[in-house]
Amino acid sequence: MEKKAQKITEKLLTKLEITPKTLEISTDDNSIININLQLDDTDTGILIGYHGKSIAALQLIIGMFLYKQTKTWTRVTVNIGDYRQKRQETLEQMAQNTAQKVKFSGEPIALFNLNPFERRIIHTCLSENKDIVTESEGEGNNRHLIIKPKNILPTDEPQKP
Image (tube, rainbow, N blue to C red; front, top):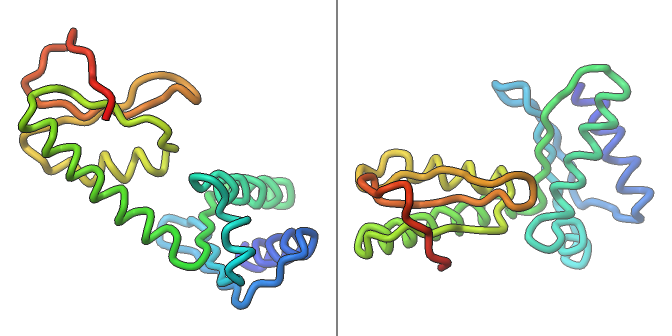
């Protein structure tokens, strides 16, 4: 499966006229194919895209090509440079800061424009916090994350950060 993912990724990057400095592919314990790319700075921004939308699309496209070849759905993650690590650190810091605001204000706060991967990071980061609770609400592009005190009534409206 890794060899197929490598061929697909190389072919796709060739079509985009992008030559990676390095391309590493591995499979983790959960059978997720991890693709790590090191690119020139100009190509990095293009492939990550605004709020990571291009990197998410790249993952989807590679996953779809893999499915078409193998008839098996395989989760694919693409990391360019250290984008995923930096984004995770940023989201964890945002989660902690927002949790503090919620704890001291007693008011829920909604976080918008997060993709499922980003919402999952915040849920995980705050799962051990005894003072707050997180939940996702909405559908599709309107899905958002609510951080609220554990003792809040369900009729309270979240404030925007």
